Figure 1 (cartoon, rainbow, N blue to C red):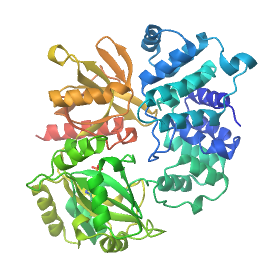
Figure 2: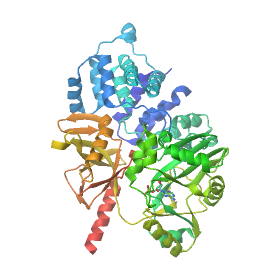
Figure 3: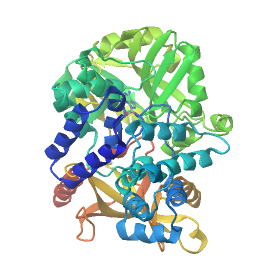
Figure 4: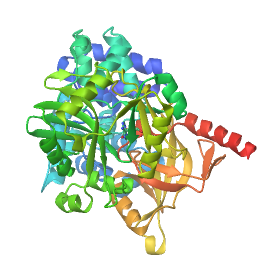
Length: 557
Ligand code: AMP
């Protein structure tokens, strides 16, 4: 049993150094010192995720439950918590300060020592994630309260950050991958591939230690990272690059990965969240039109209006988000499925087969109703015709894919090129909000946005978005963000960075007022991208590229 204190000390050390290599060294060393039980847990903890993505288990612990647990365990007042929050901006440091003031109680009072183990913390988190229905809030609070009552200030700091899955120690997926490679002398790309296939860093670490990484493969009921597309320059250049190309519509919808395990169907969103319960119509379509005992299918769901044109992306997201009263929404916003790939079929992974072979299997497994059309051609004119048709039908453009390419999980490469009209939007992280005034006093009226600095992992301010929001949207958004409030200071609220807004704008301008150095002119919310996660946010490099591009454009006009 490894104490949680030793893990907290690791985090403290990692946080204390700024060089990525040093951080990785600390983590690697720690990984070599722990047993298999902890090795399954620690790599996820380091990244600030308690359960691997796609797991049926979700923590669901907002800051308000966190503070309640803290107060019950350690005493103190909520006004004191608010004051410390304003001063530090960090729920973890607040937990540290509150725990510092508490008198040892319970087990700790008898021994004078702090004894919780990493596994103890994990087990309590498991109980929190499993709590559901009536009384679940109380169960969550009690479990976290127990942990705080048994922990030293340093442990409380990292328990708090883990509970809300916001570690702030500057180690992401890439860092943990490198640490596993280093700890167990494995090639980094093998570790990366294993992670993209299984999405479980604990499992990868265990197999890295046992030297069995190459045995890891696609697993049914474990989401695989989705293959992504690069922006193609133009139709002729894309076709030129590929020769014979597979041409498909780029549907205006949301990505899904569907696992069929006999009668059991699981559907994952692009963020690899399990969204099965929200999409019963898609499960039905699969039961009806897909003929395989076991399969993993990749595709897009689209909300088509009666005219056959896709409805706004927000409508689809309403479906994805809905947990209760799903039936009603199914009839209001019916979804259609367009499958374009198959990754696994009756016990075998297909990732290493070329696309044209996967496509042949897909069309055998799934009936035409649920399969995206594909045209094989080396003629740019044919691709251009398909492109025009897709746009005329209200879709985004086309995908030009290399028919002999393998399925590369998690990769944004040259084998899938997307061609769409230039209307660059930015995917930005929501980091704060401001309460509205007058009629809108109960809603957040504007949101603070940030882009990502990939080098430091920091989020850099780019200003606010306030337009493009109807009262209905404002109210829905406010409900969604309520649980992400970290700090309230008068009208201003700091939010846990978790949601991506797709924002359109007139122009990117240089601005000393924001930490990114850029501001957006006339920003407008296009969509809440529930399907994207923080790593998908646009980077400061992209902002600077777009800034330069638009200057080039303006000087020619
Ligand atoms: P983007 O999000 O702009 O990088 O474009 C990639 C996304 O396009 C994928 O993640 C899918 O959700 C979507 N998409 C729509 N149609 C297709 C298609 N035929 N093949 C692959 N992806 C598609």
